[in-house]
Length: 139
Image (cartoon, rainbow, N blue to C red):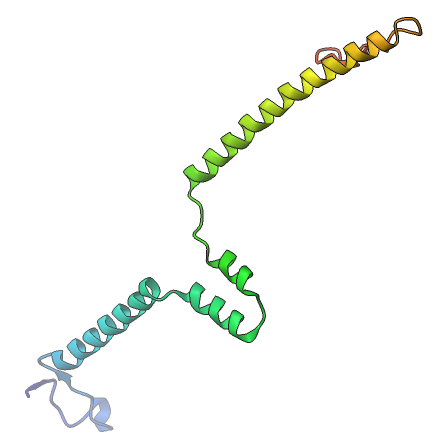
């Protein structure tokens, strides 16, 4: 292969200078590129197709660190954002119904107390906080 700068002596006649190749060595570069592509492909395949969570839970179960029930909980599919939002809305609706029922129960208890205490003394109204003045009413 022809080389550029073929000379037997370097500056000052000491050692010969390394000569530059006239044509680049493409075989070596292409082999390295193929090796890089192969390694990159194998890493991506492992990331996307191996279930490391299942393997780690299986190892923990086999060593006795966790029980089968805990393993099932760890392997359960995660809830999506829409499912979690739907559950929160259901909980909110249940709490609203519970609050309404509790208000009715309190009103009923006030009526019972008022009927029972007709001759004795008057039952005080519940204390309310005024949002504008931050004072307690009825005291």
